Length: 224
Ligand SMILES: Nc1ncnc2c1ncn2[C@@H]1O[C@H](COP(=O)(O)OP(=O)(O)O)[C@@H](O)[C@H]1O
Ligand SMILES: [Mg+2]
Image 1 (cartoon, rainbow, N blue to C red):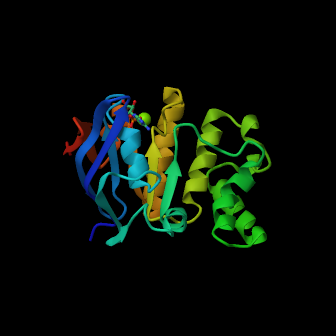
Image 2 (cartoon, protein in one colour):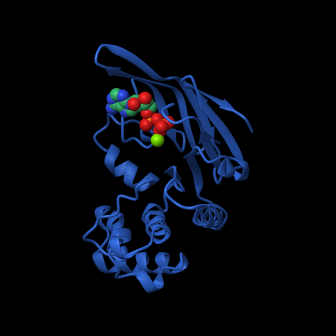
């Protein structure tokens, strides 16, 4: 049974009077604990697709199913569902500047209605597992790029999501740090059984992923 599926996703943008058919027919399906990636040229629609899969943006048509249940950006409970089921890691970490690492990671738990003390304790434990125990009270500006990325990863993981969607998770890092982040993602994938879908133009990641799709001309091709 797939844990996550998209069926016939279509998305067109309008640029003045010109129609940009970004996604014409995208379907994919991921099993639990699958480590998958999507590669493709800059501008081919990777981020657009990830935003749609993550219920941040509406497709023109098509369906998204999590645990075989149809989820839709149209429904009023989409934000709740998104917060519970999907963890996001963006290329630019979007950590809150005036919250500490600890508070950034605890935030999704508090938003989901958990009490502050328990949320902070759980965040501390997760950050410690990601080797950030010495950085709990640092603000994002006081963290290195790799530390910010690990904090963003902890924030994505904190609600035990069904799937983690990551947009160019190594995009801003040098090759040594990219390798570290990739290794960490794979460790989390194995240790927590968390399903991953990464979007990347880094073919090093594609090599290491279990499943590799290429996005081209608005559709996905499964390469492995
Ligand atoms: N809101 C928008 N309105 C119009 N065009 C957009 C919008 N968002 C993205 N695009 C265009 O869609 C294409 C795909 O963008 P994107 O998904 O960001 O590509 P990628 O992540 O693969 O580099 C680009 O040509 C971009 O300019
Ligand atoms: Mg992009």
